[in-house]
Image (cartoon, rainbow, N blue to C red):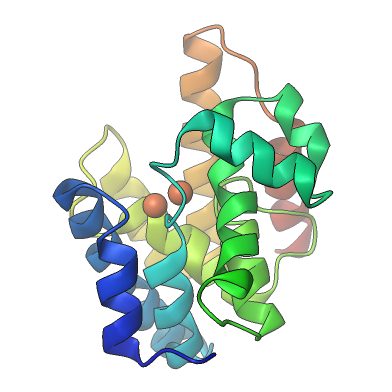
Length: 188
Ligand SMILES: [Fe+2]
Ligand SMILES: [Fe+2]
């Protein structure tokens, strides 16, 4: 089953509140721009961006069921629920939306935490999620500036902002976020 781009947009936008769809449109815009700037495939970046938050508003119990019933990464269930939608989104992109391209599926899977050895498309989608035009958190301008230098500099600034916020709030840091950040530094 391959949906047209318009059908995909219709189906995904119906899964979320208008505000989150607006964010998704911003990620589409930023992901395509970053793909064009840094030599990734803009069509794949667009599809991954459309789908990246498809599961963001699923009930927690449904996300948990999909992760358990399909033997996805159950270790995630020990961590912040905010991380679950990426894994579930990657799964439903293939099952429910007919995406068969593994680069797109993996870019959805790793858009929140990153991973060690991020692909070019992973980097584009993850960074676009930080800097899309609707984002307005302290430090976003610095991340946008770094994103103009390189994908890696942009992502390091993004992960640093996430880690700093979690530290300041005395919250648990997902270890893969730290490993992703360290790996990007090693790549520079
Ligand atoms: Fe997300
Ligand atoms: Fe997002």
